[in-house]
Image (cartoon, rainbow, N blue to C red; front, side, top):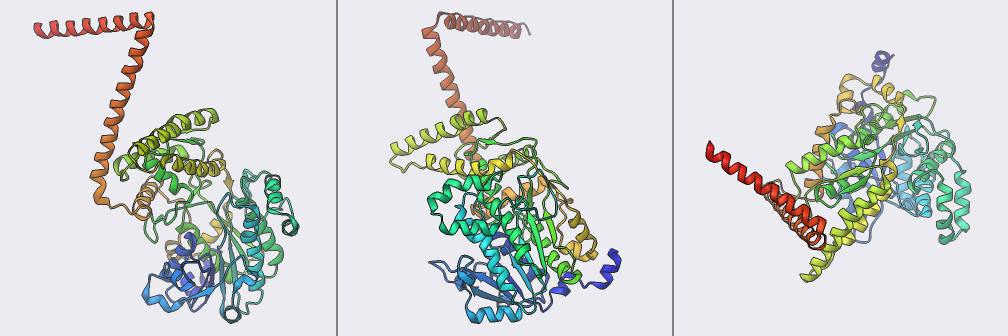
Length: 512
């Protein structure tokens, strides 16, 4: 079957030749990598229409410069002024006409990925945004495929997740109608009841979006890709490249800086992180296959690692800690060290002792030096971020991946190398080291020439800690000795043993 398909279908790059692509979310993490990959690996591609929302400080052309770093392809980029939260996506009539007559391929990745987003905002962006995209694409005269970027956690209230769209607990339209008459206070009060077993509004609205897509997008050539926790690049565009602090990136930095010392986590649980280039390659290939093979059912692909190449949080801790010891970050707060525990009481105790107490002491020191206190504020922000991730760090899921294997079987050997998305060959220790190095280089902009100074700083922190612990132990012990006869007797007994040992050592040394 695979050989027959290879004889019939053109290669992925050949398919994209001369075809125009419409991309939402192009300024996001996945969007940037998708654009770079299309331009580099499909050099004869047509135009890239990229929906961009203007910001107060930048218009769409200025924002476009952030992703348009390849001058020879400058003419391929066509920025489309728009906003997912505006009626009709805020696209002008002239741009709409251009899209309707020229677009063959659509990648919809625009979404709010904030876990603690208010429900009204999450619905507006993640659910109604899909409806507006469907309404727009129904008028595309040359549309060959519409690929929607969902999340592997859209159905995270199930331990075993298949490549199907599951029924939602509430009809999306009923929720949309309810939000129109409820005020924000009422919405906030019922949010937890509405999302039920879901941990946040993000996963809840992403499941609703899938349901709405297949209902209202009936007749369109649809496909869905579900990535898990998207992390730094594995191979492309650069090993370890990352441009945001979301997911594990901020945690790695917090650990490396010596700020994060305790995390509620299942040590043996699977950390389902997927390098960004894996789902990006899958998106490109899913579009190719859907447009040419025209499958009778909507193709749904899981871009996850836990089911095919598992890597636990405990294994990750070992690699990350060892790396930060060899390649430390600049100006660490404390030496990197972390405890992973699934015990809520122990975690809260460690947070108090290892986070809050040092934070308040540090801020007292800053105040005495005339500097602005900042550590308590940093820790409060860190704890909020950790709380949003706890649901995903204390449990594991299993996803089916039959469509992944099917898709690989339909590709030519060359395309499998160019558009790789099978995570089985991923070597986790190497990837994690590149990931940590990427946070140092691309997020913190730290020069690798400063590593010797960073190591010296860690050594200084170690000496300070040893000195502090020694003084603290002596003070505590002397306090006990001064107040307790039993403690004094124990003190004199221990000192007597030490003196006998020293005397014996001197005698034996003289005899020798």
